Length: 201
Image (cartoon, rainbow, N blue to C red; front, top):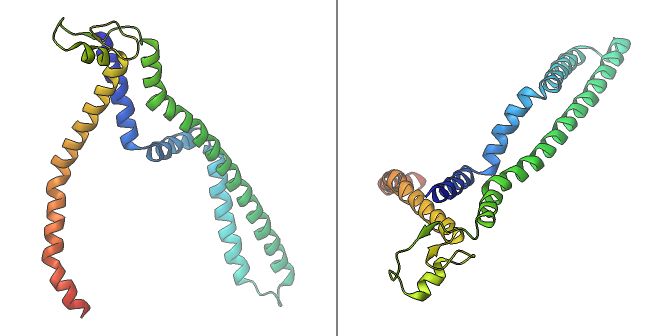
């Protein structure tokens, strides 16, 4: 029974993470990573943006013909700040690209790799024994696909059943929660439709 619960937990974790989605999780994880690891780079980027904004405002306020020396100095400062800003943006973008690669690999390992690994590791162990004579022989042979002994439910079949039941439960919850909301939206659309058509005419 412990093996059955372990497989259920692994499948449930993978399913929940898949429902949330890799992009949403990657975005939150990168925000946390950036706040811890990339804090100096982000602070530098904000400082450069602030300096660039101030320099551009000062440049706009300076006359090119009357104060050429000052205007030239400000123009060089704006150019330097623009290059520095692009450099920090490129550095942050490369950090993000590397982070996304590592996160994608970890996400795959947790959502799919863990399920495949547990099925492979326990492939010969029975998860649940079926009572003798409870099912026809062909059904028993289907339940032990993957290498479990005859008369037992294999890890492969158990993980498939867990995944299907979890997905079915998710659909029921979505219909239970979202069903009334969607019907209200449909009612609103049908109620407001004639008014919208009249407004368009």
